[in-house]
Amino acid sequence: MLNREKVIVAFEAKRFQFEEFLTGRAEQQELLTDRLDRFFALDSAAILSRLDELDSRWPGAIPTSELDRADGLVIPFAQQWSSHEQARAWALQILKDRPVLAVDGSQITPTKDFSIPVGAVQIGWFINDHCSGGGYVKDLAFELLSPAELADGNEDEAERGFPDWRVNQQRFVRECEKLCELMTTLAEDSAIEPPLCFFDGSFVISFAGQMRPQRARPYLAAVEELLVCSDRWQTPLVGFVDSSYSHDLVGLLDTLFGQGQALTLSDGGLLSPLLPNWGDRSPFFICARADSLSREGRAAFYTDVAFCYIRLTQEQAPARLEIPRWLLEAGRGDEVVDLVRAECVVGAGYPYAVETADALAVISQQDRQRFYALFQQFAERNGLPLTQARKSLSKQSRR
Image (cartoon, rainbow, N blue to C red; front, side):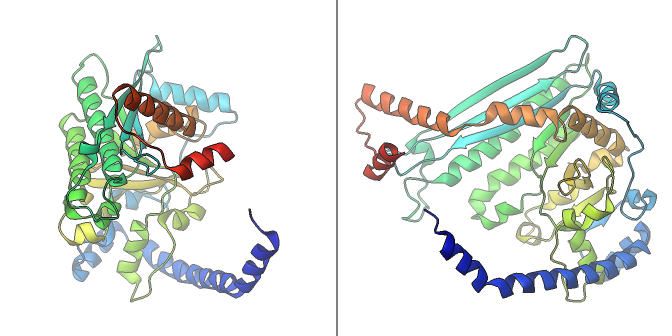
């Protein structure tokens, strides 16, 4: 139970820190304004030349020729509508006869509430062919992870028996594998256009750099294969990040003009005031993120990824779109961005296919309770000595 008076006292005790934070933000804004003014004075060739002089292999981002067609950091969206009906008509025309697919996943991690560890991964996928007949596919794959599959002889004593990491890793890998499988199946069908494939997240997986190398390896291999698969089948692939806290473009500004003073805001925070209208986007940049993976030579594929930011709602910072570099070099950047815009019109600000795959794959709290009830029934039928922690039983009786 929250004590209102104690919370108020705690806030008042740290009022100075909040004021200091806001002062620092104002100073950052002055720094940002100066760096953007200097950045806007350069074209892509001048920036590339400067990066060569600095001998910076991982400057955060590398400009492409799109920068030279942008107004500052904005490529405006040419379409304007007076009603949602007009927007929807445009979107349906863009998507006509273009299959769109998305894959998402959910997981149940082991809990100490039960004496036998068990985990599960559920992968959902949605394919909308956007043909006149209105065909679509919704399906699921469910995978159980037994105690043997969860075990790792290298675990610390504190981790042993209940390793969440294995389930999380399996979910990520299975999502990538399913996307490659569907991409291949649809690409082999010469009667239809190659699908637009959505990955719900980023291909630039800095989080894997915080893991032990053997645990990070499957993540890296899964993303690399996904990018290779897209290139092999010449199939558009988009990594969609609705709320990105990346700072690759900010990193480029720091590399060019930082002189020891780093900007603390995200790319989304930088670009939000620069992309005023729905559908406006930044130019594509090549990702050259400096993180532990790239510095150690384990993420060469980062530079196979191009990214931009796009305004899809007025309430939030721009979303981040990532595509394989080959798509940009093939001159298909605008085509892919228009397909994403169209999906977001249909989905009211979020790609409809991604939204549908998420709703399909999600495992609710009620689902988890049903899962553990089925686990208990399975254990009873097979004479397995499964026990439930008394603390867990006490919580259930009180809630």
